[in-house]
Length: 280
Ligand code: AMP
Image 1 (cartoon, protein in one colour):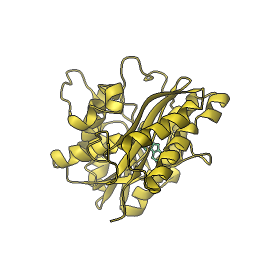
Image 2 (cartoon, protein in one colour):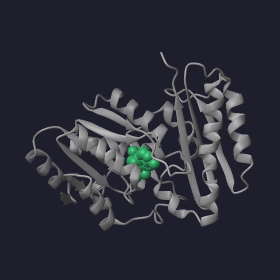
Image 3 (cartoon, protein in one colour):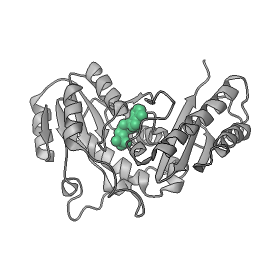
């Protein structure tokens, strides 16, 4: 596995290894969710590239950029064991040199949910992902369903700007009690960690209702809110039952639904979702 810092070296390694490439973008502090993406990329491509970059433009001014957990030696050992060929670990000024002023803005689907709470977040995500696509030129790029709106935004950008690659979405990897794996789970105290599975319980409550024929969006939101309200350590930011493609809140959810939420537990702001599409 080659570990490089410069764009020049990514392109050099990429050119030297012909065949298909899969790309796994990450912010590091890797867990089994990230590794599932790397393993899927390994299975579907001749070569796998990964990036480890805590991208400052996707953090708001009051967010956890400085505190974001990092452990590069451990991350590199995990990626090597997963069969990754090339890892890019750029310094910030390699990605955003002095004078940088070009951003990719995806419009409507970034104004709701995470975008409403974090107004500059998706501009940072789409910009860095567009740069990663231009630098690695992968045939496939791997993203987790855990960040459901990110998937919608990236798919929109790839379609709208004609990036010649396939986006592969991988299922959310969870702890045994349902908590979605996240680098930010490290912020939880033991008591908060015990409370955190309430997100998945709330999502499953609404999922089960939907599967039993409850297709009223507001009723599904109420089911999730009621389950969250029973956990005193959980402070919901939003609870959503939205169209899986437009992300508009739904009244009639019979044609498919993205159930999602952001909930503060202690210092951590946790997000999770379940996507439900009827059998055709
Ligand atoms: P991050 O390092 O948080 O930017 O995540 C990098 C990639 O890993 C993104 O595509 C995430 O959606 C994905 N990811 C993060 N957590 C999980 C998880 N629990 N299951 C599956 N994919 C995940």
